[in-house]
Image (cartoon, rainbow, N blue to C red; front, top):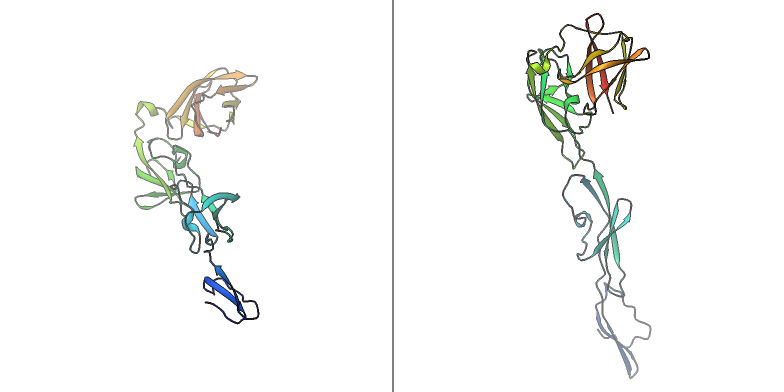
Length: 281
């Protein structure tokens, strides 16, 4: 395109006018200018990525909008924000777009396990027997139907009970399944559970779970043998209550993990006394 005879300046509009040689003619004098256009850098448009904490390594590039060019570079440009830069070819500037990243925490339903419950045990909260670090607030199923998560020996059917914690997309639900087995009370590990005992209103039990010490007020007749059972009816530890200044004290061993337990002891009158308590270190 060679404009001829223009007496006013000619405007070149990038993207509208074609690149090439433009000449300006005044009378018999001519001056020519070659114009080359450069493609503008395109980093796309800002995007939004929602990921799961246990998901695979993920490229941010697919979360950009528009038609971004490849070959750019990434850097963190703010809290939860990654910026993508495509360098421009002079005189075009660089182009930048960002992706805001949200990472949803994957749910934790604990670890599959076999839960053995004594036939003489009372109602068992199944959640307290899940290994690992399960989140509360999930739901229970048994045989494909809903279940309240409390197993009552002699009432509920042994089998596989599954605990489900809903995941926040894109995280899937977490599921742990537990085989519940009811063991006869004649099993040596479960002897004496729930047999010949009474839930005591006195003495009073004051657990100090942070220190692992149980204080018993109203049991000052001397040392007394003590058995600690978990809520499944399994004996976890045997020790001796020691009288200290009008109360008795029992130091729990470190292997007693958080959960619900029952202290069974024989008082001075030969009667078994059962005292429930909770450990929450």
